[in-house]
Structure formats: structure tokens, C-alpha cells
Image 1 (cartoon, rainbow, N blue to C red):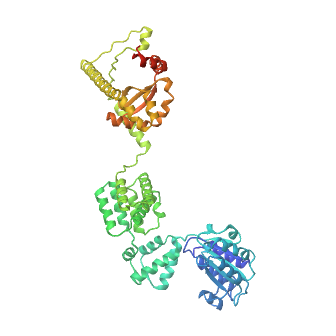
Image 2: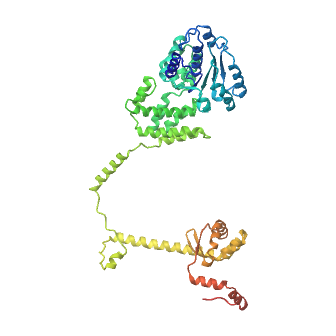
Length: 532
């Protein structure tokens, strides 16, 4: 059912007598791969018909249908995945069929076989006896060795459409005499997600719970389905930015036991349905009961499609990150409140139009800008000999400007005085700082002793070095954190240090004179001092 491209190919193969020796049926779960393999086995061994349609009445058809046939062996690839099982299969291949025309081997979930098992099967699969047919079924054909794939005729089964599942359910409902409403049937089709087997399993579970009459409320309660009314309420609170009502709905969802993953996934589908219905004739593209489809169509008119796109992006990101969160409930509530803070989308064209209107409206109301006061004449004009135009100033503005200038000058002088005091404090304790640096290494203490605190700007201390010691700056920069920590302990202030090379030649010459061994020896012997 729902796989016409496969059934027509197989029927044509029977009609032309072009039956392959190995088939591979690949596709999603619950779409009829194993069932088709069994029907193909019956068609190959049917005693009455040889056109691909088994009679289901002869001895071979009955034995295959009841799994009693000795010539049709169905093997589970997950349980018989080793090389020993494949060796036993190779031994069975040698024997002719007992009652049937062909000995058929159906291996389900064939991708579970090991590499060694595939290799053991390879030669037999390439040149099987004429009385042997292989049928493989798998949901993951990408895991099968290419050497195996190249020796099989592959048929890909598709995900079943909603109409195919609906037709299959109606056949079962009629034969089992079960009453079910359209909403519940759409619910089963939606949850089954393209799998006929899942749809039949859900129907079986509902009949066990509800009996021969299945109602939507009971089915929703059984499956834990979150009602659409809750999602409509959540979207309304987000659009109206009503945080209080949103928190109430989230609490209601949590108190009823709805899983957070199901809530976020359902909300994502809800916004997607609104986005689809927002398009022209979009309501025809969503698979829902008529009354629900009508409500989505009406609600979508209250939304801007750009806002729905942004919300869908946010909820999709929330859904992907939810499984990694240690506190998923807190994360979901926080993100939902974040959605209420999102403003409506404004297109670029609308924004430009509004700005243009504001600009046009303000043109007639603008006053001429007052002439800007300048403190100094333009230097270029002065060089040319032009006379600067007099500037008219308001007395109050001038007074305010002079007052502001005085305050600024006074502020700068206070800051300069404060910086000078802090620099003096560092200079007074410089020898103590150098001695403390000896704990971090004698070389660092020696290198730092050649420097001198020169200036301070805010939290920045500038230490200058003579040119002859500039190579030592690189070593000090690598240990600047140790120096800053030492200064903080002694001075009691957090400072950041910059090292510079002194450009003062006189200081450099004086430093060279002081460092000269002869000069130092003379000073020591005679008790003198070096003066400028």
C-alpha cells in the first residue's frame, strides 16, 4: 500500500520473466518492506499464479503466510549478525527447495551484519544457485557495504502519505467494526508520521483503552497530546506581551504533566502552521480537521509573517538546546518570557518612509542655527592676513562659557596635583620596591633599578630607562604582572606600568658617567658626588 513504484516494477519483472536473484528493500520504518518481501516470496512459489499475484489459497501460499514453509527462511540480521551464521546460511543454499520453486532467504535489518559476515555472504550473493533468491530489508542502506549493494536490485520505499494511511485505517476500521471520529483519525495520522505500522499500533492501543468507540478526548488523554487551544493561548499572550497570562499557561502545561520537549515541539509546529496559513491558500496545505484549519486561517491574519519567522527561529533554537540544559523548565520559561519582549518587525522601507516624513515635517519648524563661538582665530586666515569676523555672543552664554572654562581648568589642576602626589609617593618608595622585587629574582631587581618613575596618568605609571638599557625592557615586560603586584603591596594602589626609553641625552650622559667604574672609584675614595 502506497508503494506503487515498487509493486509495478516487480509485476513487470514477473510478466517479462526478469526476476533478479537478490533484492534490497530500503526505506523508513513501518512502510511495508518486510511485508512486501513475504508477498514476493509467495509470488515466487505460488502453485496457481505466476504473474506476481499470489493466490493465497495453495499450500505454498498458506505455509508462507503462517511462517511454516521450510523453503522460505526469515532471518533477523540483528540477532544473526556474525560470520558463523552466514556460514550456516551458505550451507543451506546448497540444498534444493522441498516443496517450493525457489528457496527464499529474507534477511531483515541486514545493515546489522558485521563486515566479516558480509564478506562471507559476498561470493554466494554474486553467483547464487538458480533455485535461491535473496531479499534484504533495511532502514539504513548507507551502512551496507558497496560490494553488497552492487549485487542487489535496490528498491527505495517512500514515507507513506496521509491519504494512504487514511485508506489503510478505514479498511481496518471497517473489518474490525470500530467507530472513530475524524479528529481522532487525523490525530493518529499526525502522530504516526508516515508509518503505517505506527498508525495501526496507535489504533490498537486506543481500542484497548476505549473499546470499539474511540473518542478524541480519551485518545488525547491516552497519548498525552497537548491541545491546540493551549498553543493558541500561548501565541496570543506572546503577541499581546502578556507575561502574567503566559506564566499561567506554562504552569497549566506543567501541572498537567505535558513534557517540555513535546510542548516546545508542538509550539514550533503551531507557529509553522500559522506561517503557512498566512500565505495565499496556505490553509489547504496543512493536514488538520476542517474546524482546526479554519481557526488557523483566521488567527494567521493577526500576525505579520516576519514576526512568525522570527518566532519560529527562536523556538527552533530553543528545541535544539533544550536537551542539553540541566534545568529545562527554567530555560523554557525564561525563553518564553524573552519572546514576549520581542517587538514587531519593521521593514526597512517603512522605516525610511517614517524618517522621511519626520524630516519633511521638521523642515519648516527648524530655526537657524546660532553662530558657533570660537576662542581663537583661524590659523589659515591669520597667515593670509585676513581679518577675522567679529563673533556676536550672548552675555549669558559668554559668562557660562567662561565659568565652565574656569571649572575645567581648576579640575585639571586638581587632578595634576593629585597625580603628582601619587608619583612622588612611588618615587619615595622606589628603593623599597626594587628590594622587594629581589624576591622574584635578582635579575628583575637589577633590571628595574636602572629605571625611574617618570610620570603618572590616572592608573598608568610610566617608567623610563636610558637607551643603553633598553634591551632589558623586554624582560621586564614579560614579568610586568609581578612588578605591578609588588608595587600594589608597597604603595597600596593598583597601577598599570608602561616602560619607555628616555630621549634625554643629558640624563643618558649623566647615567653613563655614574656607571663608569673609574668615576665610581673616585667618588668612593674621596667621598665626593657627581654634579651637573
